[in-house]
Length: 328
Image 1: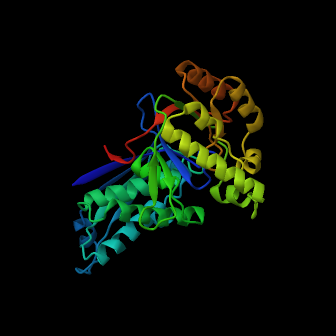
Image 2 (image 1 turned 180 degrees about the vertical axis):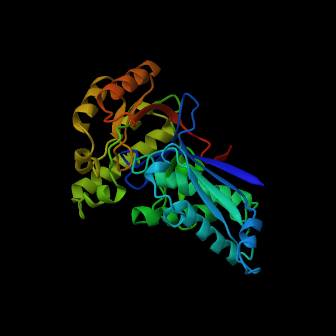
Image 3 (image 1 turned 60 degrees about the vertical axis):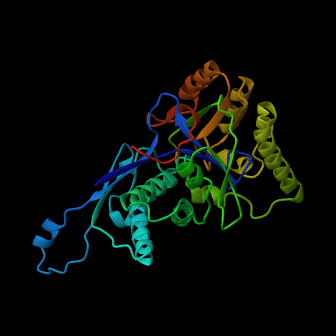
């Protein structure tokens, strides 16, 4: 048996919802931008033949592949997908389900520290593939909690603004409720989200450390008003009002300096008719939103010419991915 699961990229924070909103995206050209994890049964016979111990414990294999595999450490123990596998097997034992020897392959197809939920893609694809391989011993909620824990090992704190949309699709609002981690929010499906990754490194840890420890009362009030206004306008499908609220007063004022020429780039895109422009997650990817396909294509060309820093950078025109993680 072999199972392959694709997990799409996501935009964390979505400007207005620091650690609270996440949006799954997929390119309009149909390409699969995200990670794929394949789980298959592993033949241990060759392993046992090389061992004098006939009671040899289960042996499993990890393989790293994909367009961005070279930017990850090669060893299994240093890869978050292998840690997902170990956590999943531990959880299986608590349910008294026997583990099997498996081969698990990570096809790493997006760059690390990109601001597109790279680690979440790996975590979601791994847990979803393992759960499918074992005939779904865990519920959606149980799996989401495990995903959040493993994502927290990378970023330093448990948060779901990438794993929830990556797993479930759409725009997700994180809830402070152990019984329900997230709630889907209506989206504007005629909008295009142009994402541009310049290929400079901004680690999530560094991007969090640059933020202040405390915020003023005025900032907190404005943050709450903007987030509430965006959620309300989304439910009423008032597009213009929703995107007027899509501003980041929590992270962007501090993280903008980590991105190449972000202020001028944002100003140009807004002057060119973008409904909103912001930093995707902790950066360095930025996004620009429009409901006009021609403008989206113009943004794509301009960002290709003016924002990318190396040939490894990329720009995609995307729309909301409502599927989330899925078998392929």
